[in-house]
Length: 148
Image 1: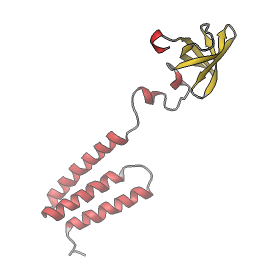
Image 2 (image 1 turned 45 degrees about the vertical axis):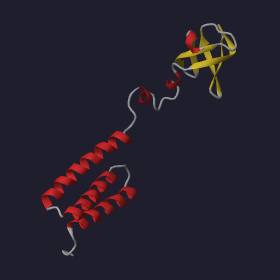
Image 3 (image 1 turned 90 degrees about the vertical axis):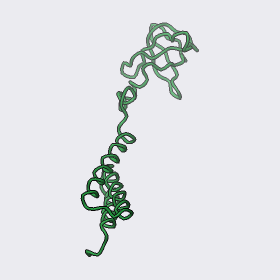
Image 4 (image 1 turned 180 degrees about the horizontal axis):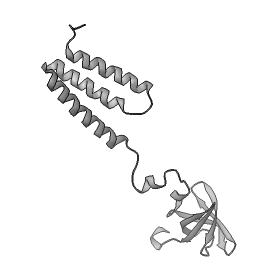
């Protein structure tokens, strides 16, 4: 057992961590496993001592985790604000009036569906913009000239 080179121990540990990533929930062990594999490769190629192996592993693990966070982190900003609120994602979108909007309301087309709408008077075919949502009714205003 002691005849195995340290680089192979790193490689074996890295493969075990990658297998554990498949079994365990989450998405973290893959980065540590990749760091262990990289450390093993460098140890085999350059015959590094234990201290350098540990330092190299810490550097690789930190870089792998930071890179993973950058590419696999949850979305941030305006798009993430309403990620689970589909209706709120409609605010600001232009829609086409399909039934004239008057004092009793009307209907608008958004993508492949029609919604009840209230707001400023608008004729069929006009473009209006969703300003807010009230239950399942879109509150709309006239679209700016450049959006029509």
